[in-house]
Length: 222
Image: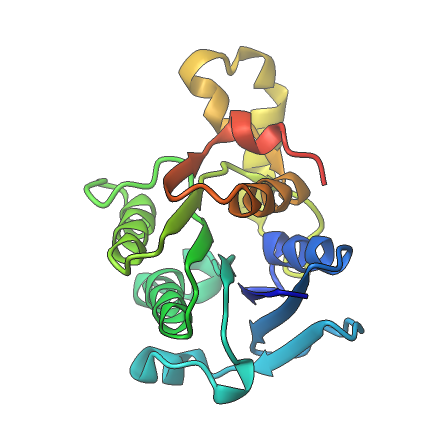
């Protein structure tokens, strides 16, 4: 095992698939920053229970994490679950950027981030504006490789159900046949494919920034 992958948000839908797919291989040590244990057993899995508010202040990983090569940031919530716009921004921006900054300080050169279709720091919609600001601020950290995954609705079994997302999936699935051209990026996508696409892009080794939209995400097979 010559590389270490750090997964942030491993209890989430995409993050869980990233961990499982990395553990199915034998080329990486897998470290995860979590607020509670994953309940997974593997000799190559290291759990680091993390106070993300403290991480925002320190911007440093615990020394036990060691050096990091690749980072997969899959943190995310909804305004409804978070309880307020302020709390949503705390998770989807502050925690994400702090995790990325700490990983960069630990030597990470490559980062893949789960963002959102339509992310734009200049967007009028609060959700998309925060996602865009997060992309911008992670970009400014200077990773050699930055992968921005921009899925629409994610398909998969969540521990915490999101009614709005479920309703959106139902509508998008019903009219998926009409989502052609520029609308294709709004099609629902399986979380396992998003995870696979992120891993494949990181493994590709290309430097610079790449955006993964529906065509790239849907083509990835775990």
